[in-house]
Image 1 (cartoon, rainbow, N blue to C red):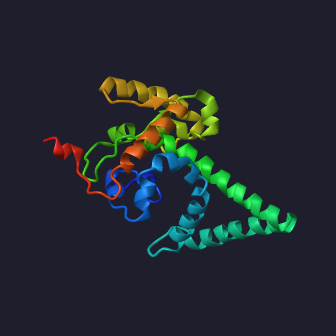
Image 2 (image 1 turned 135 degrees about the vertical axis):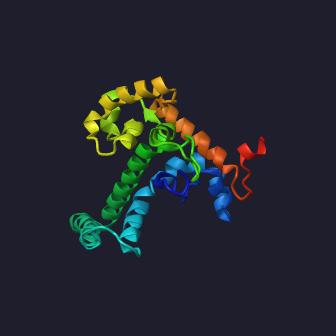
Length: 224
């Protein structure tokens, strides 16, 4: 859902037309090409995740285990660079950290991107029930046990969201039950290959980017 799903939170990428329409200045040009720029931008995701973690822990309001997580996170951010600069020459140390953070961000982003992007986005006012909401807005990635290992179970996105506490090795068993239930109740169950999903994501983001800097007009309202 818009405003509730952190996976479509607006940042460097606009994931829905309303977000694209609010772009100004240089971001308009970036957003209009965001589908093609997605994978290069993923190399910077690792830095963004570290910054977002700190911002969350330092924000106002209640944060569970704040004073336990802050020192753990700070130690993590200090100890690894300290070891790298101690063991490696200066230039090689910077290169090592750059590659490590870049690969981490790309791997995380490439694992998350195929699962939601390009699927229907429900408005905040939607009254869809839990089953329909999770199935209609998620996409599974076919590929068997190999992709189960490669993507850490995120390729079973529909089952992962329906049963968030289920151990990942059992998600493939739940998939058969969920698929048959969806067929019985006429709920579309989306599954595609990894490469096809990336193509869908790129096309979708480029289509959303066309709204950059312009007024957003709801296609549903315009058809009435």
